[in-house]
Image (tube, rainbow, N blue to C red):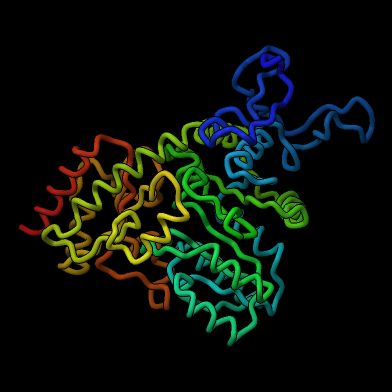
Length: 395
């Protein structure tokens, strides 16, 4: 019977259906259609060493976190998903699970500043080596693989903040020939638009703070994987180190994930309209958005992303750093703030804000670059706001 509260299989349903129903079986006690928040640190055991359904302590296992893990794995089409207290906590557990001193990481030359900081300031002193490569260039990847030995390749696509596109399938095939683990940070695309595991990646990493949470009210991260052995390693270190989200944070992300496909459609539509409007506008030197045919990675993005190109747009101002700063500080609807992926539009200057940690390195971003997180407001209002900010710059 369809009204029974036993777990159902939604694997053959569309993403929007999986996002709403996977892991969301009605509460067996009350029939509540929204699973409850289990705000408990521990669980009563009927007999010594015999916890009910394995629930003994909430750092190790919690029903609300389990629901989110199941829901995220389902929308990704994966076997395993593990939620963490932040995106960087997830990345830290991933790296410590698969790397050892002496290993080398091939790192994309355009990545989130926090990822670069974690690798360069924490893992390099531990003995892990980093080589920065333009991973969107297969020739560059091949050259690096034939020059040095690597354990892991780190890909962001679209990348942060220059929105470079990497061919996941082709890069993973090359990397696997050399025995590398392939990790894709899929935060910008979200699981609503891109499924890296299907394209050959071994692990997908997320800052769930961004599009998955979607409302700028929670901090979280996740790892998604099909490999049972990797999932076991991640779970062991997750429990041992304790980098887990609270039950309430997990519940907030459950709620956010339910509307992800709908929101990503609007984010993508708004971002494309804004990118097209800004391309060629006075005071704009370059617009970076994979949905534009002028973007060098457009064809690859169109092949491996589905239903849109995401809500992130980056622009370079003709007037240099001063113009970029003035533009970022002159908007009314776009809040000057770090982070991204919320329903509200944000704007920031990466060189001084989210990517300050890469200043002076090969991963440094242009100082005339402004990164825009396009929200789901009325697009005409957003365009008008950007136009008046540009007018202020050009005055």
